[in-house]
Image 1 (cartoon, rainbow, N blue to C red):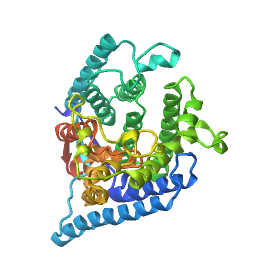
Image 2: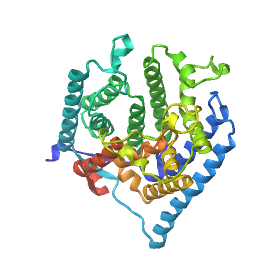
Image 3: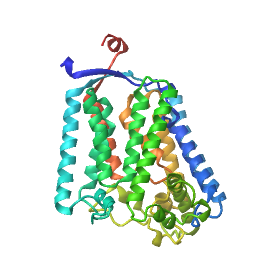
Length: 400
């Protein structure tokens, strides 16, 4: 069915923006964490920034060890994965996939509306609703479907359908007041766009800047609206120092969003009474009705200075395996980065790559690698790319 297909080309892997390079992203993430930690905008901030640099050194050595392990293994074998950069998109199959995702989303949201009443967004205007953390059932399949729908939307050939999907998915997360997954989704979609567009880097970075600004404004709106006290709630809960009260709320939110987790991680390393290995890092990979309560709760970690519930991508592994956990997770990330970096794998597998890049983009915040929602999304996008796209030769692509 030739009329149901469209040809499109992904970007040369040597000409992708820095946020699509796992190696670059690792060091950018750590630069942001250390820079915001040095600001110490909160009374709860860890008082000794040197602890952050020690963690950075340990993470870097472990990451590079993993990266070079696979890099030299490929080099010794003379192996470099290659493939065509032109894909033929079967739009009929794509729309079947989208229809299934839309059906699931609408079914779950309507079911939750009947069982739980109005969603959290109505709390913004004073309606009595459940908290965003308590509202709704089947959130894991629901959020997975929303993510898959948005990230695969660029493959849609119809402009109005594509933009309808672009608006629908963020609206769903806004309705559920889910700030974290909204940000992850926007970054993943930006990664897919950047891996496939033929625009020059200057224009790509301009679009990325606009995306960042929209994400920042939306996140600030959700954060303020979640609490009737608005900015005062942010200042109080995160124990912001008075010297920073006159800073714009969006800036305070962004800085604290990055600095609090690394500060928490430093506190955990400093005070957590490690006793024996455990496997609690896998709790987030279980369905909600099976998952035990995670150890990562401030009251269980040994210090009242640990605020919020996020402690970077390393905390779960430190709690389970002490410093060996920090070494292990960074070594794994090094292997993953080398795997994606090999040949043109990151551009050929653009949908799956966007999920991994999204996990890396939020390493400063939490570990998304073992969250069931992200794992399901990754698997579905791998299947989707194989189901709806067919690689073609450059000659065929130029003729099409």
